[in-house]
Image (tube, rainbow, N blue to C red; front, side):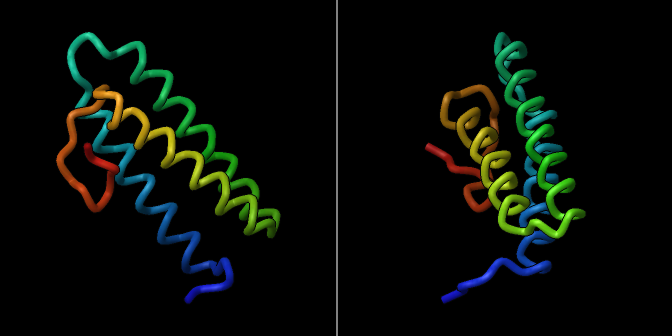
Length: 93
């Protein structure tokens, strides 16, 4: 069981979240653009926060911000705003 937040773990989740953001931006259901824009902006802001915290050496808050970012993405998937199929990268219904 992992018990610490490492540079490798943060980099892994930073890359996963960046990849998820790229995918959702290209897979918005018609009529859901307004909701998608808000979710994407919130996710991108949390990624920026994660990068800031990481640069400051605050790995706990960096990891937490990444989890919030991906949580926003997954909520959009679950609410039917994004049309994605990858159940390893997203929480699919």
